[in-house]
Image 1 (tube, rainbow, N blue to C red):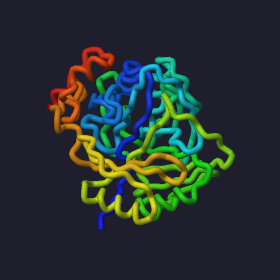
Image 2: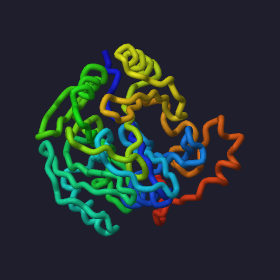
Image 3: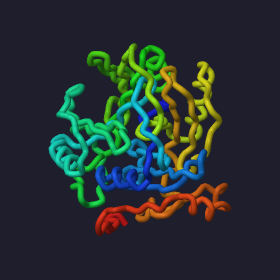
Image 4: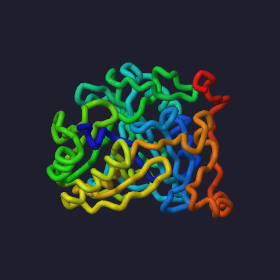
Length: 322
């Protein structure tokens, strides 16, 4: 039987200035802005989706930019670092590129045999780039970043928790994860143990709780194939005592939410239908797309949103992709 969970679907963070957010993730990191919509639960706030060419599950980092939001702080009960996958040998390129834009970059670190660098975005969001030769995804580039060095999608995440036992039980007994390694107080879990499905639990019994605001992760979403497998997961979780929401229609996927025992908000999101249902693939992210229930308020919504633009010189969608 096919597993109900197959890795990470997307990660959603809280940001501050909307234009600075777009500039960092498209202009510096080179991710594609695949969708520009609104926070369905706070329609006066953008919801940006950054990913590969089509916003494939496992590549999409999304943000809610709250203008003027104060910076949050990392702490236990949170996802503190989002790791992206890059090709082996690409770290020198990224170190030079990040430093060019004034980003403070860590020394090269080694974890479970892979080299990585760690840094923060303008809001303090924790990011890692992990170099490896186990990722066959092709990545995306607007042009300034060579495709061979481009970000391929997620590598994995770090959950910073006071204890691991109950969260590990959730992952291994109900979400198709297995323990695949340990380094000190870091425990690694994966569905197949490949880039895109890695969840590390970093245990710190004495850690302080963080403050969720700009520069912190709101939730992590895990992949499930379709609505049927999502309902199976919902039933399984509820049967085992988790407080799970009803299914919510997010236009580009269906979602259910619950808190894992350590406090991190988990989502189970469907792979279907994807981001091409309301925009041509060559023009993803160009217009503000609204759910049907918000269309009658479009004029008011757009008036309340600060306009943003892509600051990537001479970008044109590659003819070979059309």
